[in-house]
Image 1 (spheres, rainbow, N blue to C red):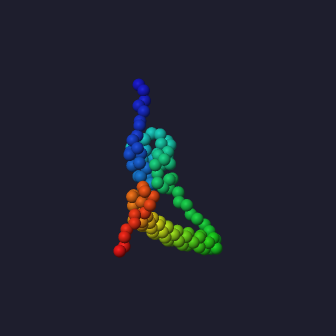
Image 2 (image 1 turned 90 degrees about the vertical axis):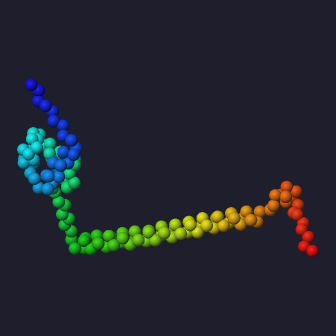
Image 3 (image 1 turned 45 degrees about the vertical axis):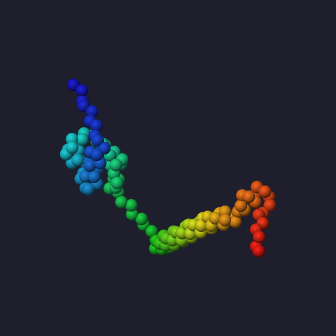
Length: 129
């Protein structure tokens, strides 16, 4: 008799990983779901886990380093605000330019010579008497 090969769905794997990340230990999850592979759940945690292997990154800094980080974050925020203002100004200027181009093309059309002048080469003389 051959040993059956188990294939777990992605949804099932994510459910097991969520339970692991909520605090359940690997051996209890293996017993609960009948998972026989020794590294199966750890592999799922690496692939599907949002918190990884329950590790937490702790940053240890000197006071001056922390001050520098805060200063740089403040500078980034100021630069992002300045960039936003510049982008708005750019959009405003592009809109003004577009309006001016439309107005200019309208003026050129209005001031264009009549077709009779263009065909004869001579302007029509109108009497002003």
